[in-house]
Image (cartoon, rainbow, N blue to C red; front, top):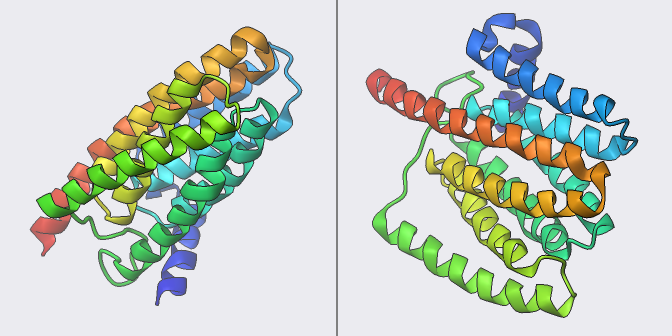
Length: 241
């Protein structure tokens, strides 16, 4: 059932242009054009960063629809982004995405596949978190933050403070994703803001990373839309139930 749902999601996406609304098409196309336009305009040659940015933008619009394929692409983005972070000595980002975000996204994928919103629909059932789960998330985030701070410091991570904050927001985002809570998009939006600052500092030293900054600016817009759409999904699913 889970595997069939995943492949069905891909079929729907590729075979029906009306799977995305006009607003969603506009958001995705704008993201792609801005990312590619920045890459071409500044004569950049880091095609790996370009590929990661495009994969990431596509994963986010699918996540906004609650489609499990978005998490599959998100895992691919995590692997690419981890390597890109390594090239600039952002070991915090590398360790976060390779050691935490990618594995937790894989777990979240399993959670999404086990909770479809309806038979044959490429849409996850929107969940919620209790106060106890929210408290647990905050406690775990605090522990992860402290542990990673000393790990990143030992690795001589560039821009240690924003790198550490990025770990915190990333952990919260993936935790909430596995819980199928609309708040996951808010946590990712917060993470996007941190990463815009982090890579903005990198651009001051190497302009070739500008496309990564643009990538996260578009990620921020996509995550804001994701929260809005998941709120709509929750209302629609509740009404249908």
